[in-house]
Image (cartoon, rainbow, N blue to C red; front, side, top):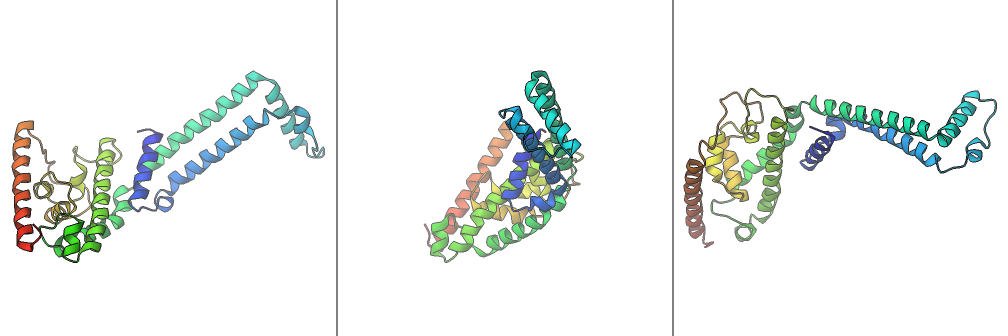
Length: 262
């Protein structure tokens, strides 16, 4: 993991509704220190364009420290080797703060941080799955059955669900979230990941995801059950998932016909 990974993950946390200023306070403090260090370095570089007499003008000669600092700055401007050494010091400090930011990020309890957002999200998705009739496949269907607002919210919620799943999976792979096995992100989000996978049947449709969430029983925690390896062989996975997707699609078509949506 590098600093760019941390920035990407922080952006994802903010996207899913996490208050990172509060939840990642130690990391944010390190970032502020780094930003301030960069501002000071930039000020030193900007000073290089000013003539020495400007830097020494209007000095308070009773303030010895100020005079010494101004003279040192003039020396900095006139000596290329000194400027290079100063830049090296700033860049080293910037790099060390990169490390501090990464370490602070890794110390975060991500389950505690994400859980409040996750619980509200899972509750809304569950309500939608139990309210919107089986067979609704798009916003037009939902509007005809007077569930357009709920379906629109579900589209946002299922995207947020997938964002959380992808983030957790990445944090597991990067070793930020330490588990006893190489679990998938979804195995941290539902108690029965097999039921989730089979119900979803390789679809990204909001209602298919919503029903999969209910089938999987949402619960954000560190999994203790043995890791589920979804793809024993490519052929088996292809055939099995293909038939499940076909059966699910046919069932939805039949439900649409019964609802008068076909």
